[in-house]
Image (cartoon, rainbow, N blue to C red; front, side, top):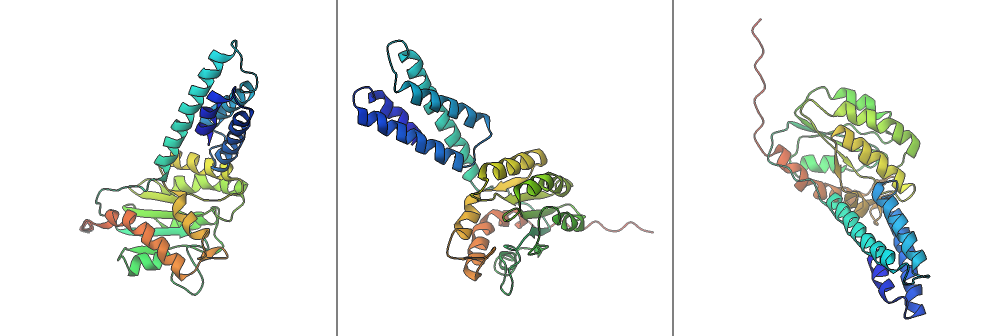
Length: 272
């Protein structure tokens, strides 16, 4: 939408309808850009400034402003393509080389520990033969999850975090970084579902990306959860049987390489 609006401004001085259409596309692009949770970044600030400038100049283009107007248009299109490239990179699932991790621990909330039905963790264990252990609790949040993190005392394991989906953004922000810092290190792989929330989307995403970047946590693209929680398989704060199985099917190709090599033998105890 933003690129289309910028291109339409080339002919905006010829027809009023085209000028109106380019303005509408700019405004729609801005709304979707904010909704996509890229707010509070340098790219967003630059895009907003360029969009505002171009939208303003499109109404008063003259020989004096034409050079600046063309430069702004080119810069705006380049920034749009750059942020699109960033977004496409974040949509790709992580790819791992074959490894020999011993266990998969899942720390999550209601989505990872449904009542009365197998969770996606159980399905990963039974259907895909992954050494999965579920430490989730229906009322979990990042503060309470610290207790589960303390239970993981060894390295050579994979930890999957599913938290924050139904937690207040401020409390989520306060507790996420310490939790991820505690989980990472000692040869572990830590990954976390990116939250596909709509309310305060920019804030949630900034908290997650900042905490993940500082701790070395791998983010699972938000489309993985979005396909389930915004579908007919969502039941309250969790998923039905079909949704749980579908989530397991989406995660299995990413997780299986981490457990594909034979595990290393445990070190022999030292003689007394």
